[in-house]
Length: 177
Image (cartoon, rainbow, N blue to C red; front, side):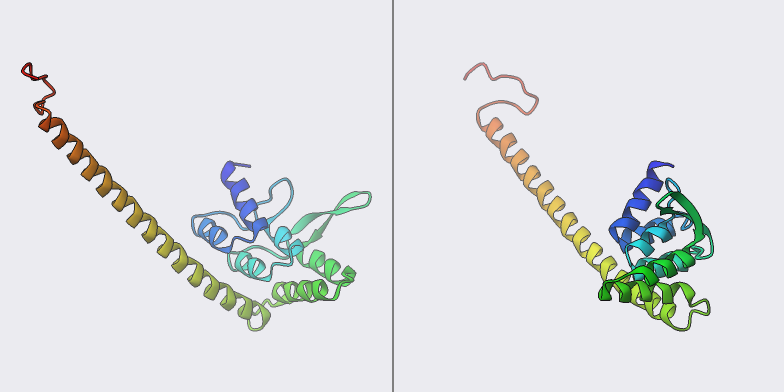
């Protein structure tokens, strides 16, 4: 896998919606497996409903077979079956509810229920994150411009001081000093 694929998989694992969205818009494959692990499997394991909705929106296939660990090695099952398995085996109440939401998003093929709600939530969050990134970039641009202004003022002051010492602009030394 390329470095871009590793960065993409890492962003999925970190739950970085904006980074994953940007990569998907720029052609990243939502079904591309890294070391046998698909982005959808990572999102399912992390109980990340929004990431699952985003990946499915970009054609991640919940019916694609994925490699799943078991006590004697690995076995193949669909992402949907993997989600069902995690949901049914979860003992902790809140984690079970989170797995259930992921499962509902994966099963909503008509995009009328859980998947639509999750996709709408993702879009709202992406709008907020995108605006926050714009604000941050504007602030960085402003600081950069202020830095250039300071450097320009300092350069002009140094040139003026150098000229005051009797040194011509060309750098020749004035023998009278």
